[in-house]
Every structure is written in structure tokens, then in C-alpha cells.
Length: 431
Image (cartoon, rainbow, N blue to C red; front, side):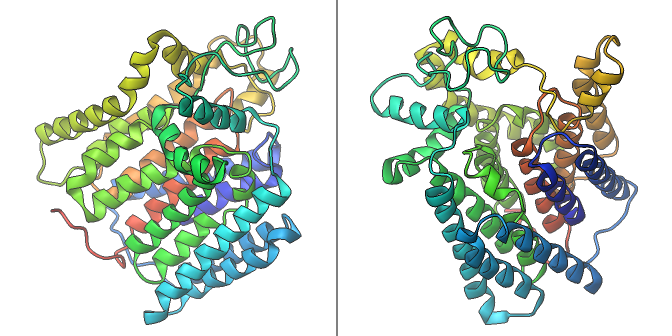
């Protein structure tokens, strides 16, 4: 699964997550590698401690990523080199030095990311950033962020929106398209620093820290930095994509499953309230049950998670139900087909323009992937993370809109699958 995470990152770096034959081939290889790992576990394969060759392979991949990332801008090259060195040092038995080296590496990444958004990309011309900045500002002034208060920052006939999204006055007819949990997560960053992207930097750093903490010495640190220094990260964070927040709430689910099971339903509820496509992972929560758990425990897990998600979301739904549903749900289906998506659907539409039901292909593929991974489910957090990776990858790779931010989340899930599958990490706590 570490190879899957690296391959996805490399595919995204090739063309910044936009369509291209080479990145699409690399992405397809990543899907096959991921599927192979899952089928091996389903066939009864046991988790084994990573061999020395795997340690060196991951360390080498990490160094490659650091080199690619350092070339992004001279503003960040020094800090990225420090972070990369700290990551590569995880291959050694650092003992008492492990925590200081980890801390230095993560701090160097944070410094690089802050420098990048302040010097290189201070105000990205993208609606993702506008939505979050204006949404938080509206909320702080007592205005519902899910009402139509947002300008169209593109041309009136932009390809970025579907019919009915831009009105005659060049304003959007939708409100904030992100669930309330993500809005709450960026609130402190906006209040303290005036920029929602500080929250995304903190989320990426916290996710890597949790990976290193749960993964244990050496392997956990290597995979954590493999995720942290994925070469597309300085495209994701500067553009204010919300997937780092989503990766963090997924990380809370994994930490709860591995180290603090009492918190699992609540972490799962927060995860479900962070992003719309979290719903694809909910059937896979069957794999988070203990071997002795029955259907009642699964129902209880989902019921508590649903209650948490509703508690976080309901106040904003109640504020204006119609606009909330239009902004968060309906808008997702109003989005146009993007021919620059990193998706197999692009070339399929070019070669087979008159074939019916191509638009339904991503949902059929996603349901097929769900059926495959649930055919012989393995009850382990590692299998849950790996299955979530495969289901999301298959869906995005056949979607009408699939860009770097969507795939960034699968880098996090694949990294967690690699960490959770290693017997070198501390034992699971079932309390």
C-alpha cells in the first residue's frame, strides 16, 4: 500500500492532476497494486513486518518526492530538504532521537508550506479559496454561509460550472458547497491568521504526526513522511482544497480503531460530516468491528456516528434547508463533465461518444469495487483503509470530474493502510 501511495503522488505530479496518458497509466497501475494487496489479505495472507528492502525502497521514494517538491520554488527548497532528510533518517533506529527528528521534519514542512502560501501563492484565483474565505467571513457576521452570497470569479460562460449555477448578474446561485464540519475546522485559522489554508497545513502535519505515532519506529515515520511530502502537496494546500481536512478526520478514525476504540463512533461521525463522498466508506466500516462483534455492534457504531454527523450538520440545515441541500448535495450533480479530468471517462467519451450510460459508469464501478472488497471482508483497520482506497480510486478514475485534490485523499488512506498492516506498530487496543 505504500507503493500505491507513492504511485498516486507521482501520477498527480506529472501533470498536476490533470488529464494525460502517462499519469492515467501510472494511476491505473496504482489501482492494480492496491487491488492486489486487498485480494492477498482476503485470500488469507498474513501481515508481515516490512523487509529491509521495503524500508530502503520507501526511503528512496521519499527522497525522490523531496527532490521534486524542493524544485517547486526556491522559497521552500531549504525547508523541504530538511523535512526530507528527517524523513529519510526514519530508516535508522533513532531511539531517543526519534521524536526530536520527527518534530523537526514536520516543523520544516509547516515552515515551507506557510512560506509558499504567503510568498508564492498569496491569493489563488480559484473558487475553492473564495468559498471558504467568504463563507467563514459570512458566518462571523451572522450570515448563513449556505445562501447564494458568492460572486462568480470566472468568466460568465465558464466551463467550471454547469447550467443554472451562474445567474444573469454573474453571481452564483449556490452557497458554500462544503459540509459544516470542514467549515468549523478552518474557523480558527481564519480568525487567527486570516487565511483558511493555515488549517489545511495544520491538518496535513497532524495527519503525518498521527501516522508516525501509531505506526511506531522506523516504518511509521517513513510512511508518514511519504504522505507529508507527496510532490503534489504544494498544489493542494495553496489552492485551499479541503482534502487535508478530510484526511485528518479519516486519521482520527484510524487512530481510534487502533488505539482508542471507545472514540471510534465519534471519530467516524466527524469523518462522515466532513466531505460528501465519505458515504462511500461507510459500508466498509464492517471491517472495523472486532472478530467477536456481531451485527448489533455494527448497527450501534453506525447509529452513534450518524447522530454525531447529524448534530454537527443539522443547525446549518435548519437555517435554510432548501439552500443547504442545493449547495451541498444538488450542486454536486450540476457540475459539468471536465475533459481535463484525470479520468478514463475522458478518452471513453472521445472514442465512444454515442454509447449510452457512460455517465453511470463511475457509480457502477464503485458498487462493483464495494462488492469485491466486501465479498470476503477482513476485520482489520488495515483492510478498511485499503478497501477505502480502492473504492475511492475506482470511482475517481472513472468520474466526470477527477483532479488532484480528490486523489490526495487516497494517498492518505493508502498510507494508513500501509501503517496499520505492519506488525511493527504497537499492538491494537480494544478498550
